[in-house]
Length: 92
Image: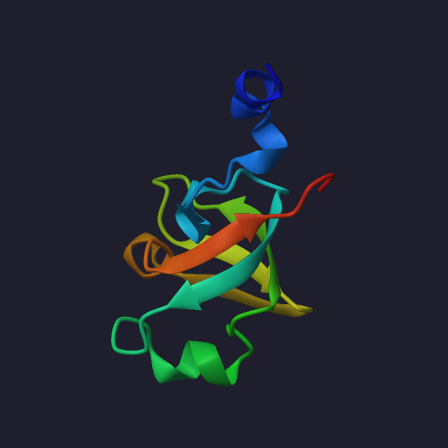
């Protein structure tokens, strides 16, 4: 019986998402990315695994995305944001 109940417990379910899946004001932690798919400048500016990222604003045509990564504000294209995997922060 416990197995059936836990199967629907959302806290046990991990959903893969990327930065472009975030909603305005939502925070997440960067989990991984492909070094070949994102510019080195983003890594130099703090876009590394373990960093907290917040979606601050989305441009009118949904591109670019304005982010706050550990206090650094930057804008990135949506196609780059789709390459950076994140894990949502609960309660944010």
